[in-house]
Length: 362
Image (tube, rainbow, N blue to C red; front, side):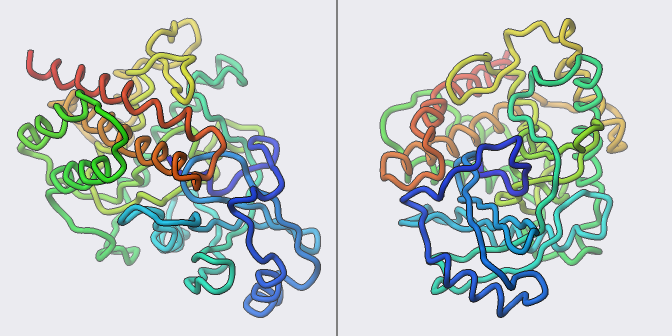
């Protein structure tokens, strides 16, 4: 769960830069004025977006114009985490496709400017809703937003990754096996206590990977409502956000991850679920209906076999991510003040994942 990449100040709280994320703003201003003189030339004002858990994200204002800066967090980081360079690469590659992404302006890999690598992109106005129940919008718009979410995901998966220069962005084939191994190691590296369901999933998942699972597309890795910016007035996606976990992978890993709320209760700290809500009354499509929306747009005929495996995998993976959030909070360098609460959701996610695994065994 990363910080939102581009957002409106109305949809995410802006705060003074947190003490743990302070950097030399004067040095940043001088660097940007040198690198992007047509964009940056006056006084620079910096605020921090208080949202997300991974890479700190900031609003820059200069000369009446707005930009977004995203950087790695301070402190010791988990292996292969916080890959903002990959975010910059993939969004740059997708700029001229039908996948909506913000305009990239600059990538700085020099730690000496503000302490960590960072990139800057153009600010986009829009709406970001974090909870899939979409209480803030009309019932009519809720279903349209879910449709837009499915359409946008399918557009991403239909991109020819070789044609846009991303042939070397990941390894084709055996994505699920490699991901299970990776997130198992990440979980072990950030483990703070016992989680029996995670132990069971780490043993079960490698032994039950579907035989036909070598399909390869661009996989966002964190495709969910909170990482989609909507048009200020219409139920249209104007930007896909937070590409930190993007790679070449299996498209159904994105779809299953996007369906996680259907398997979790609502109202728990850090958990944005739909499982106990009356979806029909709210005009929110069921999981089955949402999956069908995606399949129709992606040209995927014949349904999806072994669907519980993909949902179990998605829940396991997010549990491992949240465990990392929790460990960083204990270490004092998580990007969000609520990280301690969010990290506690790892056990809930793992239990839901094991429940899905047992469905496939029945």
